[in-house]
Length: 116
Image (cartoon, rainbow, N blue to C red; front, side):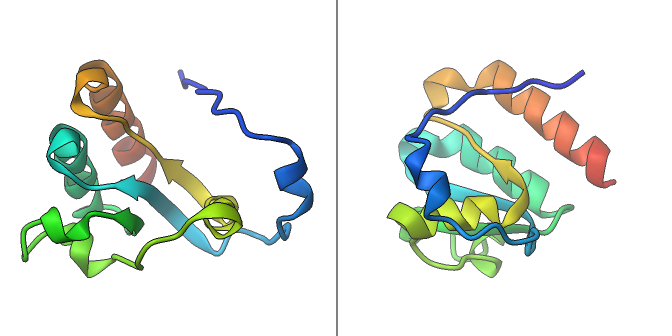
């Protein structure tokens, strides 16, 4: 079973992106803050077993020994963000902690089952 979450953006964006073969296996683009605590913990757990590449803001809020910092590539915005997402085989997403209990558990299970 899989879930498809439709995240909508203008279709004209696709015309501006290169149609590359995936260059990266798994990516996450987003923020790191106290409001994202549970989701960040889930991403870090996944990244200890799966090679996730990270882009985003707020990395300074992470612990110095965070596994996220080891694969952190800086901030990415606009078309560059969409191109980063398009260049990946798998894109991870999460929202603030209020939305997470079911989604995080399911996503973590699916990613780990696929890659391990």
